[in-house]
Image 1 (cartoon, helix red, strand yellow):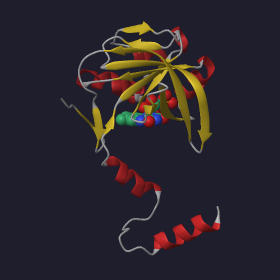
Image 2 (cartoon, rainbow, N blue to C red):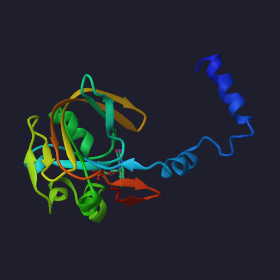
Image 3 (cartoon, helix red, strand yellow):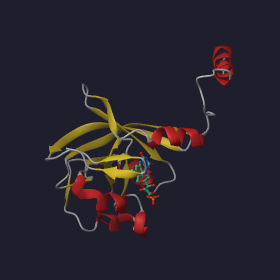
Image 4 (cartoon, rainbow, N blue to C red):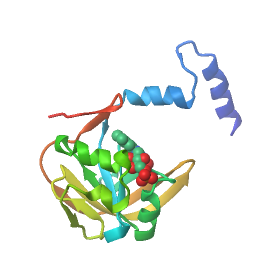
Length: 179
Ligand SMILES: Cc1cc2nc3c(=O)[nH]c(=O)nc-3n(C[C@H](O)[C@H](O)[C@H](O)COP(=O)(O)O)c2cc1C
């Protein structure tokens, strides 16, 4: 850490406007207020398929078309994304709360079992895409940056499928339908 950054951190502790310590609990409390668009990350083929519900999928840039997602390195999804070099970003809507819960690992479902109860197609990259997603974005991995507990995966967009509706929002620990 350089001296300038050390000075900033020292001053931060003494700033009256800051009323929370800069720790994980305060950060979680701050992030609970932030409404995040819900997507399901999908990867793998057949019995190797798995995936995760995320709020971290967003655009890195639109020109060139690049997406990014921050995945926990200890999740079942990252090794499959790494192995296949692909991932689908399935933006989900109000009708998909149940499937979003499955991909969050609730109910103990793992791997291909998370795909139950919805219709899937295979994208150009080989990643599974949710047929009735609000929108689905097919990506191949351009770069993966492993940092702390997570890996920032940057994807080159190969294909896009536009459905209807608006994304589900996750805020204050629960889903909210908008639009
Ligand atoms: C609303 C919501 C947002 C989430 N966002 C992320 C995320 O951005 N990155 C991530 O790695 N996990 C995220 N998770 C957790 C994963 O969905 C969950 O840990 C994963 O699917 C289960 O891990 P497993 O595959 O190892 O069982 C989120 C969960 C929920 C409910």
